[in-house]
Length: 148
Image 1 (tube, rainbow, N blue to C red):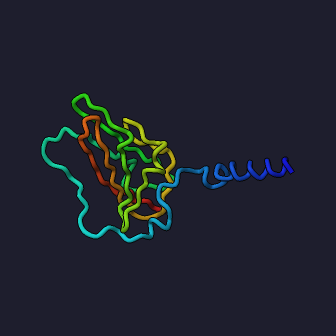
Image 2 (spheres, rainbow, N blue to C red):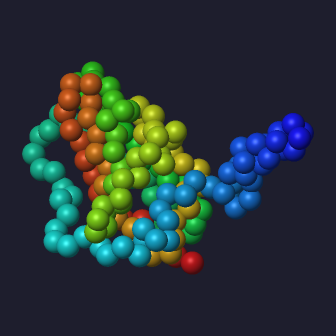
Image 3 (spheres, rainbow, N blue to C red):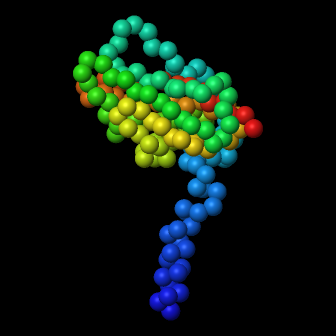
């Protein structure tokens, strides 16, 4: 009986590590991609001289295939540092989807890098918000175009 119980526990613990899930980190699910896009304008550009942190989406091209490498660089100014705990990644849909818990293991002070992010086909608008050690905010929005 103990052997059977240990085997069952091992299957439950190891099951999430096996199969298709090993191919990559699911960034956006099919159900989330089916949600309607946001209504109205999405704030994108910031103007003027700001000392807040900068977020750069590093694109490998106009369109990508899933799984893909997702790479964001963070840059702070004036001797400040990026606060990794302040980073929030949102999939802009109606309602918005907070992707931060899925990305937490990949968030560093210098950016986010996921070697194999899985996304459904289509256009996906993401917004990244963060703060530096002085509390100054930074934000950017970008679109991931995923082709079949």
